[in-house]
Each structure stands twice: as structure tokens, then as C-alpha cells.
Image 1 (cartoon, one colour):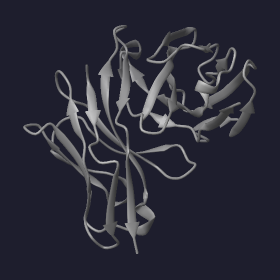
Image 2 (cartoon, chains in turn brown, orange):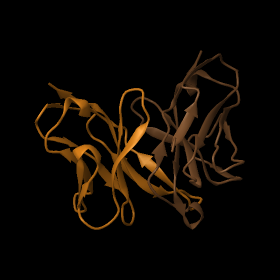
Image 3 (cartoon, one colour):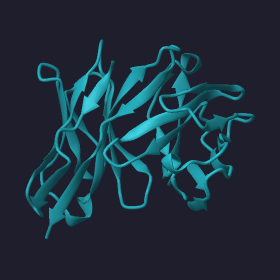
Image 4 (cartoon, rainbow over the protein chains, first blue to last red):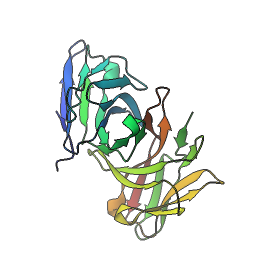
Length: 117
Length: 116
């Protein structure tokens, strides 16, 4: 198993540009999520999904969009990049029960380091 | 709101000495707690978790954690530190969102530095 994979590993954007961060998992996990990691703030939840076609906002969703057309893939879109979105982005997946209302251990991808100028 | 706190930004320990990385939690109901480790330029790796049962939980790489309900703590421990244990450690708790779905709430992280 490859686990959770993310591309690209590193990206530089100019303010106003858009891009998509890719995330895929091969563990057949229903639950997937995106976090951003900033110094001194731990990880904060951006968006999450409890299955194909079902997504919802986390703590810091503004400026980001997601979709979940398949169980495997959960891309994160930056609509119009801003310097405040400079961060490290992690995708995670986990087995879930009861329609996603109970999650088990989350497994993380290697991260995407994003710099917005 | 459910949360975890890691009171130390950094912990320094000499190789061979025991180490402790502290975590306290605030939850309603029974806590479901995790420890993750992050090595430089890598993603988070799962170390161990507490659900119910034995208060001493054993995990990967010789780490263990002690759940203490009266002190609302879940400290990470290792009897003998290695230089290779130097990394960023995160405590996390499973929490419910307003939607009824769950998420992990992370602490701010503690950097462990093990000196030779």
C-alpha cells in the first residue's frame, strides 16, 4: 500500500493564482480531511469528507474548496491564493463507522509546502 | 469545546535518559487520545492511542503514554531516549463537530531535542 500520497511536494504561487493540491489514498477509507500546519498553531482542519459526494467545512475553510468524486481522491483547491495561505498542507484519511460520525486513527500524507508571494 | 494543551514548546533530554512530553486534555465524556510524531519535512506518523482500558498504552518505537483521568493528562514517555527520537510531537483528541461528525483536535506541538 502506498498509503496517503500528496502532490506536489512544494509549490510557489503568486497572489491571485489558483491551484489544486492533490491527495489520494489506497486504503479504502471513507473519511478524508485536509489540515494546514502553521508554526505555534498545530494542525487546523480546513475541510473534510465522510464519503464520495459528501464534504463539509472544518475550522478554517475560507479560500479553499474541495470535492470528493471517488473514495480514493480528495483534492483541495485554492481559488485565489493569498500570502496568508502560505503554509504546509496535510491530507489525512481514516477508517470510519456510523456514516463517518466515528473516526478511527488518521493516517497522514507527506505534506505540500506552499509559498504564496 | 474539546481541546488538548501541550505546555512545553521544547523538551531537551540527554541520550539514554528517560523522556516525558506532556499533554493535558479537556473533553466532555470519555476521551479518545492520540500521539503523533513528525520528523523534519515529513508527515505525521501515528505513535499510539488511548480508547479505554489499561491506563498505560504502549506504542511504536518504544514509546508509551500514561492516561490519568484525575489529572486529565496523557503524557508521552520513553525509558531511554535516542538521538533519533528528536522530532516534533503532537497530542490530539477526537472531538465532535456541530455536524455530528468527528475530527481530531491537535495541540500546538512539542519539539523534543535529544542530545548525544
